View 1 (cartoon, rainbow, N blue to C red):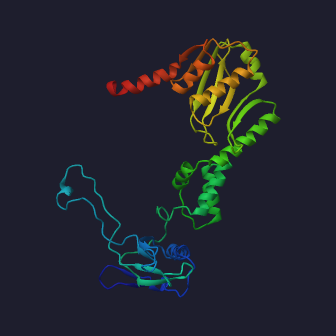
View 2 (tube, rainbow, N blue to C red; view 1 turned 120 degrees about the vertical axis):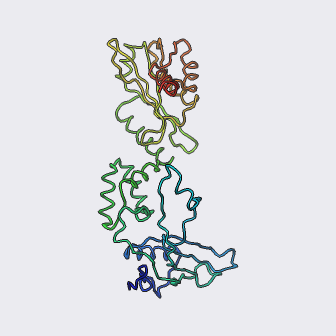
Length: 347
């Protein structure tokens, strides 16, 4: 790079860095090479335009520009909005940088033809970055990194350890913790992953002598899984008076609703009775789980009272399976809803 300083804004010539006679088999390979050069010299690119050939009427191309190219176009009115009280001072990184690269396919009608890169303008009218730490674009994860994060997340590795592993794989990686958290929040186990995990859990329950029930779909994959321990049945036989049923929605590694049934002892202590992973939070799923509970506890008296939140599907299932049991709404949920409704009035 040659830096020119002649009393005008600094101009940095990067033509030599991007001049190459190398041919690239695909557009993706060309862009990967350009990004690697950009990372090395301290600049961030953006795609200014591209075409796949428009059904053979033009040559496929891709235009690469500096992220600071062009002018910021906003709704701000010069001289008016600046004087408005409380107006937040804003700015833009764009400074009409003229840098421009163009990649084209050598033969427009041949999809297997190689791509070449031409430097239309290699001049920057601003300083380049000394490093890319903290830059949102440079901190993005590649497809391979996203797959790696997905694998580590399935193994229940903590986000901080995932970030450390990414840094060890690539010391030049400038990804931050926020990017890792955002990637993890978007990753859910696919249906195949969840079903295979349920299958493994079902096998383990059999080995540990749990009483379990399950349902499968047409592909023979488990969709609903219910289990209960023999000791829990004995406790429920001793204290069959009050059952509390609640369902958490997709807060587990399987991404499935998790149903938990809890009982109370004479000393107001709680104990777990049964658990279930359900395919959906619908009446049919709840009713299946409650019928499994009823079958597993044939020797146990019917509960005197069943407490739930105001889940209409669960309420209907309770009425169908245990019609003689009294049904109450959870006081904690009632108080929470009351506070949510009246807080705007008193606060």
